[in-house]
Image (cartoon, rainbow, N blue to C red; front, side, top):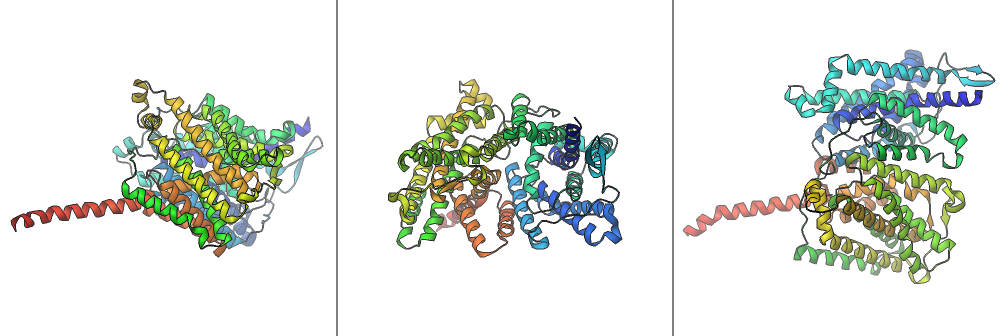
Length: 628
């Protein structure tokens, strides 16, 4: 019995740090409506700076002074980031804000390696809390007891701050109605800056307080950000009490899951998250919002068919791409095959986002399921490559059909979070079901047959399937189904009034997108000759979002251009520099700030301005010509 009590107390200690980080993210989202993907990076920076201050400047600051100063330093960094970057894009679509914070995360990951090195760092023990307390033969670290007490204290301070101060009243008002707060004369810029500073301070403090318990390393950000998203969604976006309760729930699930349900321990928190979103989409303590008319960040634009010039340009580009094996080596062809595969992957998500208005944060699930489907058929069942390529993506189709049924019942950020939960469930199954999937050892030896084994033949195969998938999705867009899908995206109530079953249409679009992503995954398995759980991971889902938003979500060819630029740049940077994430992240941030409509959107804007200027010049010149 004592062992389980100690395990429970260990879970409470972990909940304290998780609550600090999650409460900061919840505060930031509640006011600014930014889904801050860089929140985990601030947590990591807090840990690294605290390690330096407590290790090298302990004489001047002391351990606890170093912890607090580290959190204040990172809060100041957060203020600079908010003023220099986020303040410029507050009026940009929310998905582009997510893209900017993702780029910032990439930059921070390389910066910490550059400054502190790639090795793990072991922090000092906290003075006064170096020992353990005996509890019926079980030792409880005294530092854990300190964290257990700290959680409710921080909750109480935040409650007083938001309920008993003028600043707190303004923050709560901005959470409910930002436009009304602005109409009352409140300076929104500085209010947002102060909220961001508080949120970052809490995240950095959570990271700093972890150094006596865990090693500091450069993967802390991605490890914590997933749990933080789960906590915030379960508790309710913008709810501090919800974040506290959810942090305790998630931490205890992690603590006891490994004991009670060892085979599904990783899945438990995501199952709970999915269940909460299905039953109560706004979280346990969140407030229900009005139905979203469309996915935040997607402007309603009419789609058009390609002009004759655009068709000619697309055909010429395809012919040039098909001729690549005539003048390129095997390495370039392998890179070309990978880019073609990710064009398919990005096009599937672009179809779902731009036409369906559904922004998925877990699209890699269907990519990975397609890869595993091929591996099962080719490696275990011994089926020919053609049969495996035809049937393998059906596993992605099945996953999309099951998960999509529940996901399309939601909208906006709740839809995105539910897709993330489903993706993490699939990843967890692949990681833990070792007897079937091989776990983190993966499934090896998934090689193409002789007719497709050479780099040139596999490149032509990938390019041909990519062209087929992109053209097929375009046909769907301009079919009656595509028009019904866009009607549901633009005005759910009007489309329902004329007899369109919006949820069924969206579910069908979800299945189509998942199946196409499964095709990309199937080809990827043959390209790499193996399948690992990473093909289902959150980082790959974010890569897909980056490709779509980088190219231009509101453009016709944005997914294709975004995938080509992102993958080519990523691969080239990895081969040229050890700081590839820093350069790539800076490029992403630059695109978001300078060209928020994406690369293709930027080019279309320039072209439209030139046309407008030419028309204006012709209009001004016409009276003179008439007089002559």
